[in-house]
Amino acid sequence: MMFGLRFDGTQDQPCVAAESERTMTDTATGGPGLPQERRIVTSIPGPKSQALLARKQAAVSDGIGAVLPVFIAAAGGGVLVDVDNNSLIDLGAGIAVVNVGNAAPAVVAAIQKQAALFTHTCFMVTPYEGYVAVAEALNRLTPGTHAKKTALFNSGAEAIENAVKIARYATKRQAVVVFEHGYHGRTNLTMALTAKSMPYKYGFGPFAGEIYRMPLSYPFRWPGGAENSGPEALAETINKIEKEIGADQVAAILIEPIAGEGGFIVPGAGFLPGLADVAAANGIVFIADEVQTGFARTGEMFACDHEGVVPDIIATAKGVAGGMPLAAVTGRAEIMDSVHVGGLGGTYGGNPVACAAALGALETIEEQDLVGKARRINEIMMPRLLDMQTKYPVIGDVRGRGAMLAMELVKPGTLEPATDVIASVTKYCHQEGVLLLTAGTYGNVLRFLPPLAMPEHLLEEALSVLDKAFSAAG
Ligand SMILES: Cc1ncc(COP(=O)(O)O)c(C=O)c1O
Image (tube, rainbow, N blue to C red; front, top):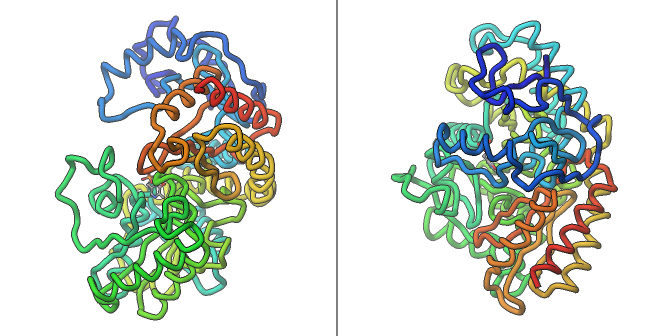
C-alpha cells in the first residue's frame, strides 16, 4: 500500500507507536487529489505531532533539526497535511525538491511499477535501462548542444564531490575556485567548498585543501553599488586567480548560478558569463551547481539558461526525481570520459526506483510546462512581494528568478540583518499554516520555493498571510 506509512518508517515490522499515535496515515492518500486548502484544526504543532516530536527527541540525533516540527501524513499539489489533520500551504517544496508536486502521479506510478520489478542490482554490476534513459534525458535537457555524458549519484553533495573529482582528473590540476555565500553540501569536500561556518562547518574540520574562495557578485550588498557588482566582482576574481593561484593551476570554477542557502543571491549581469569565459580561456572546467536551481525552478529549465551560460559540467539533484534520492553530473563527453573505468560510481548511484521516479518527474516537467508555471508563479508573487516592500521598510531587497524568490530583511535604511523580524514573521506564518523557509549568510532571508504545481488561489492566500505577518511584526 503506497501511502500506508507507519511513523517508524516501516511497512512490515511491528510499529512501536501506540495505536492512537498512528492517526490517519493508514488510509491517507497524498498527491494533487488532496483538498487544496489551508486548514488549521489544532495548535501548530498539534498534539500528535508533539508526541512524535518527543519520540524524535529521544531517538534521533539532536544534530538533525526541523524547521517546523509538524509530522507529515500526506502531501500533494500545494499542501502538506500533518498527523493532526492540519493542512499547510507549502512554500518550501522540501527545499526545492518536489517541483512537480509531492506524490506527483507520474512519479508515483513509475516508482510503483519499478519497485515491483526490481529494486536494485547496482548499475556497476548489472546495468538497466532506466539509468541510461535518465542520462539521455539529462544530456538533452542541460544547457548546450555539444556531446554530453552523465553519471548518477545519490545526493547533491555527492554530485558536487564527483564533479570536482572529474574536473581534477581531466585537467590534472588541483585548485578549485569557489565563492562567498556558496553552499555545496555537508560531506568533507563539500563543507570545504561551502562558505558559511555555522551550522554547516563549525567544529567539523579539518577540511579538504586547494579550495580558493572568491567574492560573489551580491548586488544588494555590493559596496560599489548594485549595478557595479557584476563587473567588479568578476575583475576581483580574475585578479585573485592570477595572483593567488595561477590560472593554469585551477582545475575548476564552481558556482551556484543563484546562491541558494546563501540567500537567493542573483549575481549581477555578466558575472556568470564572465567566469565561464575565464574558464574557457584558461582550460578550467566551469562547474555549475544547479542542485537547487535546476529543473524549471527559476523559469528556465536551468538557471544558467537565463544568461546563455553553457557550463562544462552541471551538477543536479533535488528536483530531478520528484523526491527520490538521485543526483547527476552531466558534462562534456570528453571530460566525463577522461576518468579511468571504475573511477566513478557507488553502490546505490542511479538506483532503479530513483531513476524511474526521475523519468516520471522529467516527463511531468516537460508535459505540464513547469517552466511556464514557474514564470506564472513569478508573475503572481513578484508584484505582491514588491508591494509589501513599499509598506514594510524592513524588507530591504526582493529578488530571485521564476519560483525561486526571496526577501532580505534589514533594519530600515541599513544592511544590518533584521533577525528578530524574520523570526517573528516566520513564526506567524507557521502558526497560520504557511510553511516558510529562511536562508542567507546573515540568517535574514525569507525564501519562497513553492512546488510548481501550486494552485494559484493557495499562493495568493499564502501571500496574504505573509503580508499580515509583516503587519503584526510592526
Ligand atoms: C546548491 C546546492 N548544492 C549542493 C547541495 C547539497 O545537496 P544534498 O543536500 O542533496 O547533498 C544543496 C542542498 O541544499 C544545494 O542547495
